[in-house]
Amino acid sequence: MNLSKTQKGTGSPAVERLLNALRFVGNVGSHEEVLERDVLLDAFEIYEHILEELIGKLPEAIQALAAALIASRGRRSKKA
Image (cartoon, rainbow, N blue to C red; front, side, top):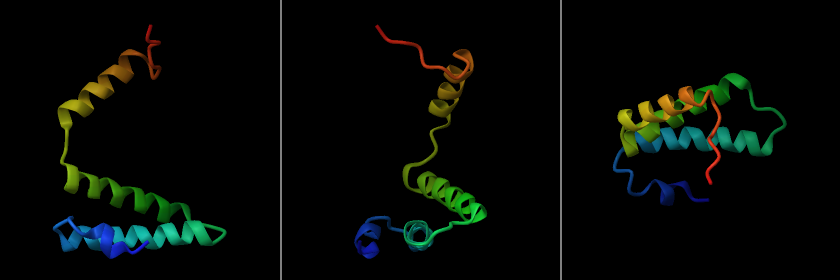
């Protein structure tokens, strides 16, 4: 995959740099035997930041999701 094509439209060189970092982590995970846990956790943190930058925070929706999970004690109710 040509990363420059996927980066078009981000409008942010900083986000493009973060995506490039994730590309390297993905390459290691795909082509090498071991991906260090700390590296993977760092990648998830970067990914979360990218999503916040590109999509924006949705605190009310997240709070509603959390409240639903708490109310159901982590289970989904069966829909009829």
